[in-house]
Image 1 (spheres, rainbow, N blue to C red):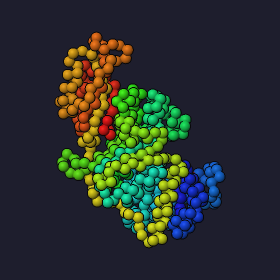
Image 2: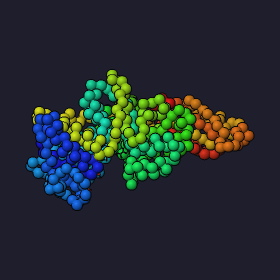
Image 3: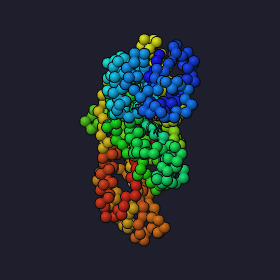
Image 4: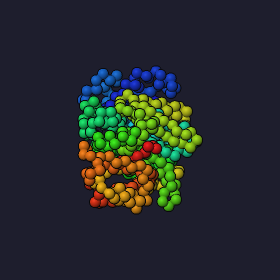
Length: 437
Ligand code: NDP
Ligand code: HSE
């Protein structure tokens, strides 16, 4: 089986290394040897260290490489939407199976790839696109196909998990923790895709599509990043026995019109320290799947890094090889359920609201009245004196309110009305609460 490798950066170079180091084992597992037909890159002259590969295999002509008659399988580890989409659609339509790690493309236009795979009778595998090394998509796509998944909750971005874990451990603010993540090589020079939640939202779309047999794209995912999470938010979470994580949450439900639906969101949230995801530290990923018959399942491991991600790519290459030899195809896309994507306003969640208020009679009643008007039930209220000033003498105090579950639109409208209340000097923080805190 001859491979066209597109990209030889962080992931691609490790794919090439593993193909070389494990060639005998891989051939034995597949039943036929693997051979690299060519490697497409952007810069031919780039120093690639001691990569164990014939330099003659490198080319800048990806299109020409894919079209070669002696190429059976295309492995795409370049990233981005174009030209990757055109390359892969053409390869799949020509009957060449594809292995890709490209979550951005799958979330933006997975339909184009799945349709092309169906047209060309080719396999499309993308295990590395979500949670790097963790075997997660195959369990969702195959092992759990006899069950009904109700909810997927995950930490799927290592960079932001490193930052939030550092904020939790040291009390640092976001900027300081990001600086540390950059120095240690966890955050890229431009961290926007990670800290603004775009990377996690793409992964959430892929997970939701597989879990709920429905096409979900990046545009269907409600996305908030972690740039607004403060040291005070983290301290507040700690005081409640919680920590803050950037969560991807995908859940099955019923929309306002009574139709079967999914809601998919990515945002920072407080979770109790007793929740399995709370102990996921450093740059690790973990995904918690709740299925009807199987119950709760937890997947944990490295979500990024060249070798870790290459492990998932190699697993897909072996699967493609076995399918080719057996004359069978991978399970095709399953989107039959075609559930409605519910808007964020209908998502059910809980809020933790921290208010700087005047400490005088009637304030608590006024604040509670706003919650009541929006049909939001308060679960707990805690009042603490602000700063060093003693409470109870007309000076400011901090009110910390945690709600019961309510539609996000009602919670957001409550916060908006609180902003205009005379007694509320400022809203110090608003965070969603998940995981039964
Ligand atoms: P890198 O930026 O390290 O590597 C990209 C590679 O693509 C480079 O070899 C580059 O060539 C090549 N390339 C870029 N543009 C072109 C082009 N127009 N034609 C041919 N080759 C091109 O990316 P990563 O290895 O980090 O990521 C690859 C994919 O894997 C992405 O989709 C990413 O989202 C995904 N992924 C990455 C993870 C990680 O930990 N890094 C984890 C999980 C998924 P050159 O070497 O000449 O510059
Ligand atoms: N930037 C991603 C992360 C790695 O921090 O998890 C690739 O998915």
